[in-house]
Image (cartoon, rainbow, N blue to C red; front, side):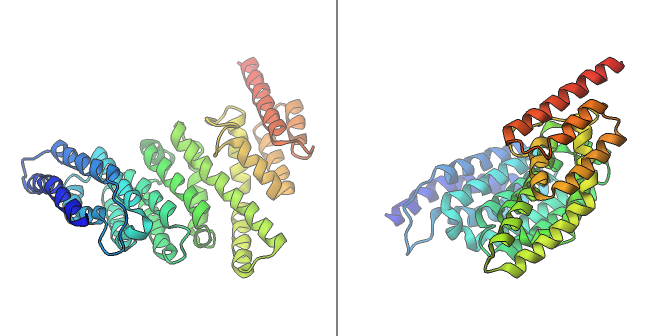
Length: 360
């Protein structure tokens, strides 16, 4: 019965809460003690499966509300401990997924507020990851999109205060990775507010620096954001061709996205060309979401004439071998399949690699 379940949970959770209270209040306690108790709470909310009831509160919600102040206190006390931030965000992720978005919804604003505050104070990347979970669970519900987008603006503002140069991005690759995976998820789940906001161009400027970062995960996160954005451009094009009930919104988004891509396209394509030629890191050439080939393929579908112009300029200023330059540019208008296009990318990379070795 619900009453028996509540009784059993109280017996399990109360000692954990008591120890957390003692740890957060004792100036001599250490972060490992706090993390152990957070792990115990996470195990409970992750594996607790209770049939839903229309007349009783979900037990996971009771656990969240009873521990919220304690977790917040721990976050503030050990604000620079990344592992603790990871564990607390993992607790929130499993709590949200355990009881489901409908039941969790009344707690969402409190979680968002905590994520904004914690990231502003600590600049720890787990809070960005937790924000991406919120986007996944609530991003397609129009009722929550405005508050979620306010969160995105707040988190981005804090992140840009940290990531001002290539040296800053190099020093904080985890923040770069999670920031761009978060923004890629925003583009996938609730793109409209971002696409028409000046934040999008700021993200492109940051991505241009992130593409230079010699860090696999940060580089992949950056490319994932760019590929998702171009994919959304293709979606808008298809909607415009087919017509839709929200045509005015779609047209506004399409115009805004076209302005950003037109403004930043040359720089983006130049960085992609430099990566293929070996002058910038190229961790993902043609595999997975967030690859160089994926971005170029979709740009060629979205704006083929502009892409060929950008790529021709990029290959010229970076002194690509003449023969490989001609062949590579030809692949953009030869009607290749995606697999054939990937093959042309790999062939260009191989030619540039041989040319670079011969010059040594």
